[in-house]
Image 1 (tube, one colour):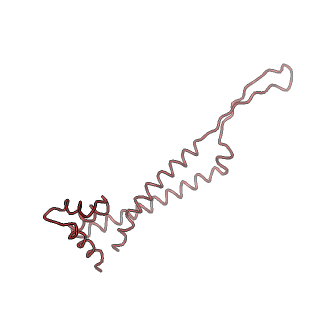
Image 2 (tube, one colour):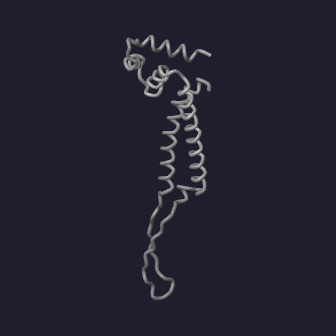
Image 3 (cartoon, rainbow, N blue to C red):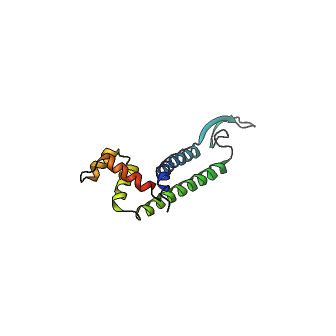
Length: 141
């Protein structure tokens, strides 16, 4: 497993979050039913006034109803690909030393500063020491 997949982890998480929001907007757009009422009378005597209620998707809202389904399927595929990357990172993370796992979790996943990572690591760790250990690990072949 390539260490550089770790760089894609944060982007994969953001893609998942953004795509789920986009799916919510699509579903909301799909459920926007327009309602209206019109009045009219019969063509023949007795000319009784009647009110007709109409509802449905407006043409301006959705030109092709299947387009929403295709877009939702595309977004679902995007989420699956991003989740696959997240799983690959989790599998890779289990293959590296525990100390490096902690450093990566604190720095990359929790987005802590190097000083905060050093405090969490304990045992007289310094921000520069933890940063250098991380950089050495990532640059090693």
